[in-house]
Length: 482
Image (cartoon, rainbow, N blue to C red):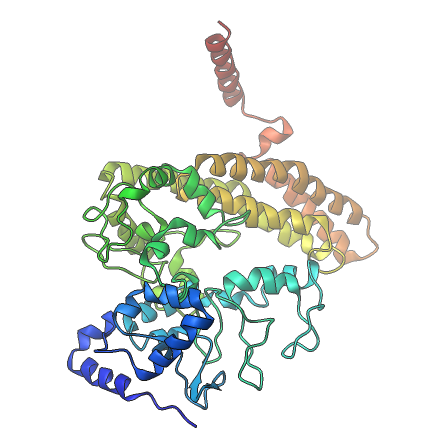
């Protein structure tokens, strides 16, 4: 039996055609459909929590039920017959877009929706090969897949959901609400990554902890940074004043006690509407070894953001900031942030990346089979990101002690010694290419350490700088020796 898009949806489409602007806002049905009523009657007994969550949602008040979201065409790859109706387990952005067209269009233009493309990347190689094996075997993966990837990477970035012949979903790829999930209908993304089913609570989506499920840990500790920052402290102290359930929720009008992640990156201001493209207020992409402007990253993914310059995005974010801070404060903050990016680039990232490229031809075995592979990876991927993200969100301890301090410590105490060891080991190699490579590497090490940023390490600090440092030490001792 093939389920058509029921008459009630057809009627709604006619309403949409007559009132185009309402499409972005969804629609309200006069009464709950017979199909959804039947679903609700059963789920009330069999899935009481789901029924309760739905009952507290705006969907319930609009008479949007199980069937309107889960309905499927018989020919859909993940469709299966369920009590006389064809449905699919996964509600994809394409499904949500039937009502939430604007939101889905913005989301699918964002980096969030493309997060599943990490599959096959260096990070995934770590989870699949270095950390894992092919021990998890399923119908879709008869040769096995790494449990480290399934339970780790894929749960935030999203899995490529595999559909079995029965229409059910392969357990290696489902359950999964990763924000860049690759869905059976060809769409990318998962709305439920942020709008947890089945309540789809606005207050929950606006809460910092909602973002903290994925934006945490050694390589992107945004939730830890936020909690340390004055913003996070203000939020926890004033959560009862945040008006999180308000439909409009415009900063400066509906609340002013503190910002959340959503406030800064997505939510409305007096001059901007809500956006589901979280990159439109970011002026640095701090993911790579060397930070890039976001339009460059968007261009690599073929996203429309490639045409939106970072200056415009920064202006968008500053438009949020000035609801609580004056212009001079905001501009000075960005000067501090940019200066940290410049420091990290010039002192560590650029020379560090050049050194890594020079040492790679001299390393035996595949990547991550040598100490220096891990050392450089953690310097930029963990410590360098922490420094940059910490500065971007005003988290001083993470910027310094968990960021630049760790970068410096490992650059000088691990990375340079390991590079020297490789150069020394290959300097008399019988392989002319390796011998030449070792000489080039050693010269690059020497040039790097003799540069203004690093010559202190060789005891070559400028005399004037040395005198100034000694004077500061004396002044410090005089202040605190009493």
